[in-house]
Length: 281
Image 1 (cartoon, rainbow, N blue to C red):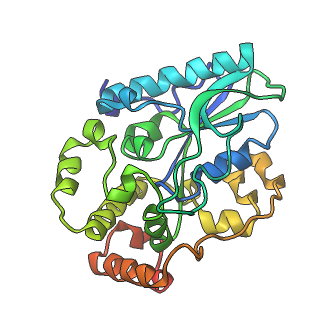
Image 2: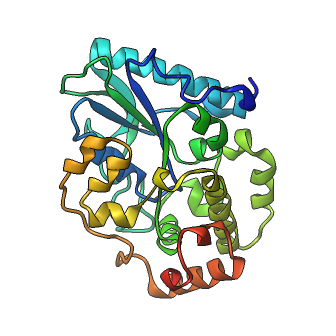
Image 3: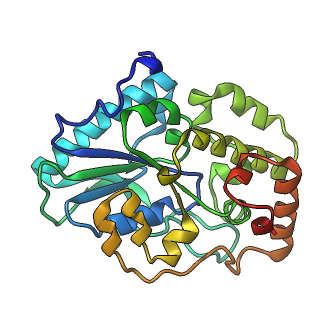
C-alpha cells in the first residue's frame, strides 16, 4: 500500500464508529489521558495493546493497526472486552511504580480487560501507542483522527531516566522495524544524554505535520483537570479529575534537569517548535 493513496479517515466502520489514534513521546501523559478518557460514556481508550511483532515494517504496522481496530471494536461490542496493558484489571494513570531502589519498574501487563459500561455501535475507540504510532504518523494521519500528547522536554527526558525501559537508554526497539537506520544511528551516539536528546528530536519531527488542535500539552491537561481532552472527545469537557503537575517531581534531580536543559538548547531540536527556551530552564 502506498501512503499517498490512502483516503483520509477511510477506516471508519461504515460511519458507525469513531477510531482515534493517540500518540506522543514516552512519558508525556498519554497513559494518563487514556485513564481520563475511559471515564467517559461510550468511549474506550486502550493503553499500548499492540505488540512489537506487528511493526516489523511501516507497511505491516499500518495494516496491523487497521485490523486491530476492527478486531477490538468487534470484541468490545460482542463480549465487552479488549486487549490493553492493565494493572489490577484496570488501565492506570501511570504505568510505572514508585522509585524505591533504582529505577521505577513497569507495573502493567498486557491482558484482556472487561469494561463495565454500555457501548453503542457508534462508540469511540482510542488506541494509544507511543513511538509505534509516532513513527507511522504520516500515513496514520490520513486514515484516522490523530492526536499527540506532548510534555515539557526537560521533564520528559528526566522521567526517562527514572524508569526501566528501552527509552531510558536513548533508543526504542520498535525502530528496528519502522526506522532501522535511525536505530543504528542512535546506537552509535556514545553519550546517553546526547542520544536521548536526539531521540526526542526525532519523536517531535513528525508532529510538524499536525494542526495545532491535534496537539495537546500535558501541562494543559493538568491545569484543566482533564477537560482539554475535549479536543479528542467533545464530552471530555465535563471531566473534572483533580490532577497534580509532575514536571517538578522530586525524583527528578535538579542538577540532572539543568544538564538536560543545557543539552536540549545546544542541540536545538524540533521540540523547540512547541516549548520556548525559557520553558526549558
